Image 1 (cartoon, rainbow, N blue to C red):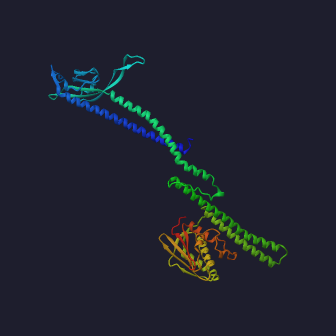
Image 2: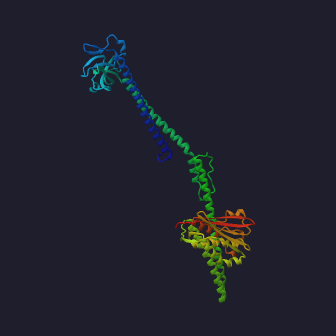
Image 3: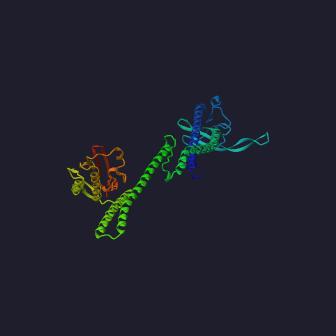
Amino acid sequence: MHRTIRFRMALLISALMLIVLIGFGVFIYASLSTQLFSSLDANLILNAEQILPILENENGHLVFGRGDVIAIPSIEQDDLFRLVAPTGQILDSRGQNNDLPIPSASIIGNGGFFTITYYGKQSQKGQGQSQQGEQDHQDSMRLYSTPVMTNGQIVAYLQIGHSTDLIQDTLKRLLTLLLIAGPALIATTALSGYWLAGRALAPIERIRRQAAAIGAENLGKRLNLDLPDDEVGRLARTFDQMLARLDESFQRQRRFTADASHELRTPLAVIRGEVDVVLERNRSPQEYRETLQSVGTEAERMSRLVANLLLLTRGDNAELTLDYHPLDVADMLRVLVEQMQPRAEAADVIVRLDLPEPLLIQADSDRLLQLFVNLLDNAFVYAPHGELSVRGWHMQEVIEISVTDTGPGIHPEHLSHLFERFYRLEKARSRTSGGSGLGLAIAQEIARAHGGDITVDSTPGKGTTFRVRLPILTQT
């Protein structure tokens, strides 16, 4: 249980509440204590200011005025009013605590505030008894001492004190209240936090249960939870989107496997058929030679297919290594178009180049050559008896090469699938064309390995344009 998020959240909330309560309690306690003692100090100063004017000189000593008793503030049982000589002798006093010790610092200099601790008597009623007894208890008094001046000389100190019992009792009651209410509030907070955490995490538990029921065999299933647009709701929708991507990836992988099996089975069937036929009876050397040539052609086709599959697999696993070096793509395209001129003539395609400036980048020349061979060969297959334009230019930190044909164009429903593996338009599905449906997928993989991309635009009846963008500086 202690490992659950629900429990940890409740524990964290309780810990935060404990910290807040401790801080709040300390603040309230300190503020009240300061306020009560400040009020007491102000009252002592006020009493001193009322008494100073009624002091009289009697036989060379200062005493409280006998005829102005009404001017002296009311004296409570634990109050202290006294006049003390600078030597420590008590000159006159009022109240019942005048025998309390005189702090030496209170009769030096300008006086000030002092706290005197002493033991007094506290009445206590015994259990089961009606009589009252007395018990010693520790008490404290707040003392204010101020000098009395005559002719510029300190002749005595007026000391006024008041018990702090009431303040201490108030602070003790506050502390008791905090110690009782604090744990109760923390316990309530912990239970409330545990309950609220359960409600907040309930959708996550629903997501977990439904996700646990989804496997490779039913990736088409979705959570479809009706949740608000909050963190949990967005998590559920993100999970559904991830499932959709995984489902699409699995479907694509299944199609890829099926298509690869089909493509490999075809040349194997041809090879086996040729071998079976030639082994039925003795053949002439010429017939054996023709059979071996046919087998060699199919084996070469299988070799190309396996090499292409290996390239795509390395690209999927980020293992496609490139041999970077400075390359002028414009010069490479001129040489490539010249080399493919017989292929263009066979397809009755006129190739026009528009490469006015060098297109210098860091790239793998062999891989880029494979990319553009695939694009040009694709144009020869799809757009015979037309024109093919190859243009190139700089665009900020990339170069762009466009390959535009004047063929029949591609319908929109095919455009989003052109770079899928083994995807071929119906016109190109014959074995005579030699296509396996991997050319554009390989071109896209090579472009991405260089940090670039390939896009396609096409209008039915007006032709198709492939655009290759490659960064000028590609790191090795």
